[in-house]
Length: 497
Image (cartoon, rainbow, N blue to C red):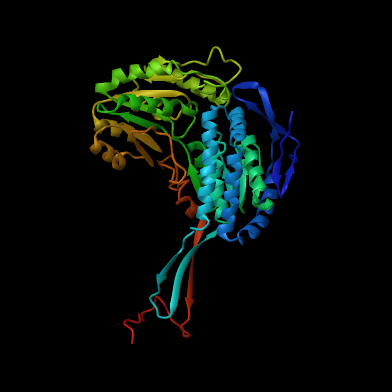
């Protein structure tokens, strides 16, 4: 069995403890991909020391030159796209059609980041004093600690890492324990593309040990975390106490609203993809389906007919619609919500059980509950699995109220042919992202991504805004008057002589 290593101080290194964890294929738990290091806090300290040296070198590179490295990363990823996708499906489970998209998002992010190396704009503004120049520019912060989830093993690390690098920061990268191999492939590609070795550090291991050590380290001023709201709250408390810059991307309980005037065939495709793509393991997944009463029964029948025909299986096999859940703990969590739904008197339309045929993997039948009550646990809590809750409403006002009445605010979707409803949705739905006549999933790499309320803390990933997170503003003044000029003193010069 292959043993993988951390990348610290410019070298691939075995864990100091000599301890490893197994990375298993969730579609076949007998298939062991390899053993990966259980890193320690001491290794985090070594990584920080190396990253400090890397930062001192990297920040001096011109930003366009840093962008050139990211462009090379995109080129390599494009050439190795199918290979990376296959490895990702093996360790994460989602079908190859999805993992190819995951890699493509990394490629798109690389090319976008490369162009931003020439667009780290500052501003020049007129000074209030004569013969004085005033300007601002963006500069790097230091070491960025990146803690990533399992569901997008390539896309999400690149969302975080590529902007951090183009801005001139060094990076300490901790991939999720369930997808360490894709993380290792990404670091290999960065090095092949010419990134100076000490600019990137890769640390495998448990979140409770390695992730916590990264968050708590005094010499890591910048943290980006994607994961559960509960863990994000702990990360936020620590970073707040230590005055760190922090970006949180956490949970969601996203709703697709279908109005009576909607194109039902189009809405059906959106609901299937939004609810059961990635086996429901997306923070943007459609967890709630809000149906106006006039189309409720018909649409629910259409949906259940299609869902019962979806094929579970190994994502690397042709014809697979839905892959496995990531691990046994996720299976148990999803199963627990079936009991919760029954206890709340919701109607189990289909699914609700582990697959009786695919017993070697973490497979759960796609599930629909109808007659779900607004405010119930099934309707309010993030499940992160293939479970869809259907809520009946009377009219657009009730639909929007149901959408907004959760603690999360990531994504929302409205299917309608009424332009007034569509534009009301943009302004009234309390989410960071709203789609009209499209599912709740499908963010594009060149736009900001994130949510409101307990989904995040106000920062965005992707697009142009993330570059402001990974850099800070420096203001410069150049006075060439040859005399002492005192700004903010009551001697405003007035009109020229």
